[in-house]
Image 1 (cartoon, rainbow, N blue to C red):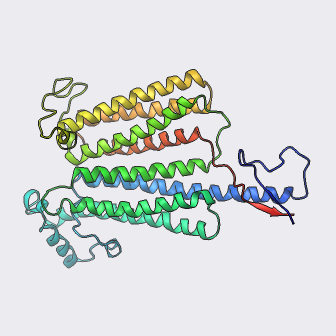
Image 2 (image 1 turned 180 degrees about the horizontal axis):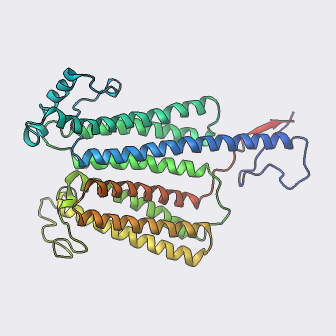
Image 3 (image 1 turned 120 degrees about the vertical axis):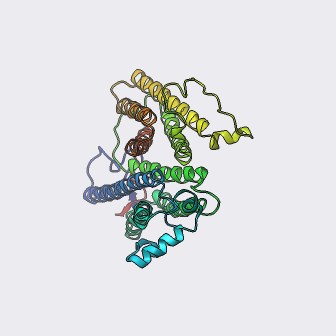
Length: 383
């Protein structure tokens, strides 16, 4: 009895590709097809998870912008999926809300109908979060139990499941910050919550892209590959900065562009002591830094595109670099519109959603330089 590897590690071709067909060729091809079918099924699953996370981020943004995030004052991971079912239960929820500073200072006298409007935003956000968890966990367990998950992906996918659970805990940690001494949630915790959601989104894009077929075009240079990674990282940092802007309502600190309150560098950027707090707690400074981050990403994306055109014209890497620059440009225009129109809900949500799209494409572009996961070498047949 002997064994032989079915696939070559480098390109997924059957072992002995180009040689005289052997009696096990049919079995080899059938095994290769099974792996490809499994990958296609997992890409479809992960694609649905990405869509659900994208919706979750948008609803979360709407929850923040409508000041709805503190309307549910208890964390009930299981029972909380059921909304109030009658007048008595609604009154009970409203009474809980009346105990927190946001009601007592900002919304005192709010009617039940007004309360319901903010309650539904927060309930929808939590409901979607639970749905994302189920949408990820159940298929993952199925693929794992039935042996469809390749060995190299078992721990990464399990890690994503753990991160999803952590995200739920971070969400409650964020809400809890606004229930005692504040009338809103901590911008530190909100930015962390948003960034972790986007980190999970980016990691899923990375895995999903690795399971997909790739172009045979070689990377034009190591510098371009590294540049793509830097761009993806910058976009994630910019999303964190955007979370600070949302948490502080800092988008209203200046409603002019390209100048801020009539100056290139507006006065009042470093009014808080110690100085480092200005970058997290001074509305004007937070918006100023977010603008600088946008300029940096625009310049980096432009440089990356020009370098790709110079070093790899006509390649799929070059085409993706051009698309990425176009996405970044659109995001910059949306951001400017948000500022000039004083942060209306629709434009603000478009800005947040487009940021997630830019991040997803930037990660997919970076992953494209690394090629698809090699087909498993451990799959063997007996002869």
